[in-house]
Length: 297
Image 1: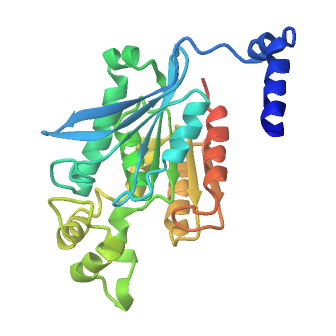
Image 2: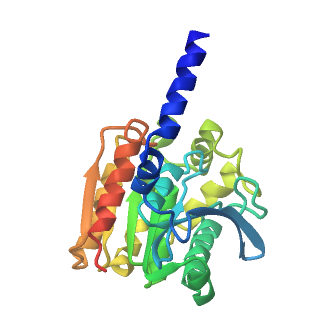
């Protein structure tokens, strides 16, 4: 009973204290005229419908806008990065490729690259820039692992992309020749297929198999070689991020290839962590945010 009386007394003091409540509310910032939101997205692409979300920043905009391309198959989707960017005024689109995570169609690396281009083109459409308060001059692609290749490809294909962040980018085309999987001295489709199927990587994918994907890598090595994209990426800013996952040499080679084109806007940073940046998630998001702050306007 004494506790109840004490609570009642505190409530009475708070209600009767002159100006207390009004001063507290007045100290809070007024609500944004356009609040932050999340839009569920269904985006047509080559006869299928990509599914995902669009994180929309608060305010009338127009806002800088990023696309986050997830890796193979996409267990880590980097949506914490999306949330960090949105909290600082960015729109962020995050979609699933054809044949992945319930999206109808067949998954392949070629299809994923086509889907990446479709997403950028969607952001550049004038009707969508108005609807979603997008600044089409400030579109950035962010890709992790396989998504790093997709981000680089979209940047190479579409000159309106302003910049790219490549997080442990996977050079898919070089994989067949340079990685000797399962202890073999010579790469084979069968060994590549086994590697691609590890860790339940094929479980979220439809219309494909380890053998089909391994053959695609073998038969399209030049098209899937991220180094070949360097001339088309330059001279735009690129942030190349690496970890202790075996991808440092090819990712540094990409940075050097872009620099050799005369691009002076290449930044590299390494973290002592795993492929998913498990111990550095907050730092990763903050580093990307800080890097975007220095992009030309």
